[in-house]
Length: 367
Image: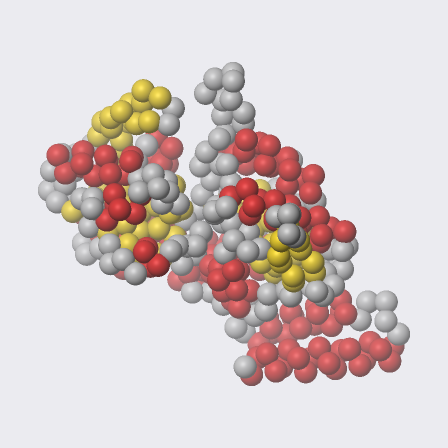
């Protein structure tokens, strides 16, 4: 097995650190900075030759800088002779620009997919793309993880009598997710139909389904300005919903979104940690963050071990609380490190490096 290396960009270092820790690893040492003129500077401080490299970089402010940094990191690893390079992108940038509403508009999501391929990415690992058809934009494999299993677990844990609630899709794009979750939980489902005057402005929302006297959970892939969610809450209260929750995968919260949601009719707004959240979210009792680091860690391990990613989702408890803690698994990581470091060494050098690497691995386990 080739050596497994996790490299972090500057977008979400805590996320990358937890992923690496769950895999029994430390983040690969790198240098990240900017030149005086603002250009990205990146340098590997240790070799990645022959390794399976997983670069963790999500989409957050400043989005264009984070995307450019990812491209620079990918090319650096490619020139450093990494065997494979996987871009781990919890939130894929420009994913909502996935079609032409008029002949004067670009399909920027396709452009980003092309840029990743040209830079040297062999595979993309992301979560809850705006539309699943985005996977077809890539000429390389793209694994689109679903957040359903984390959402289902949260609902079971925090909402009493969850079998009586109604799962509501915020729009037609969220209907499939809402339906899947409702089937798993044995609940009812409803949906909203949006009326738009402009592509970026929702004029009204029509509820299809009965929510009177019910606890309601609104599901969406992403919340940005929060205008859609706040309007949905108003329509649900008018329809007689008793309690209203919102669960989204990506909490972007642009502009005045946090203020609007804090003053909204929602009992609680839940998002995952696919992008870093400010203290205004983490310390706000009206918000809750679901940790999905272990989902990514387990899928990375399956990919590295040539096991189907789908197999990782068969057990909810083992996936959400997964850690590479078994000694035999840690030993396999240590052995792959030894094999990589001994490549092209003389026998004496190989034995010496093997001893040093084993000692280092044992010290890490005792820490």
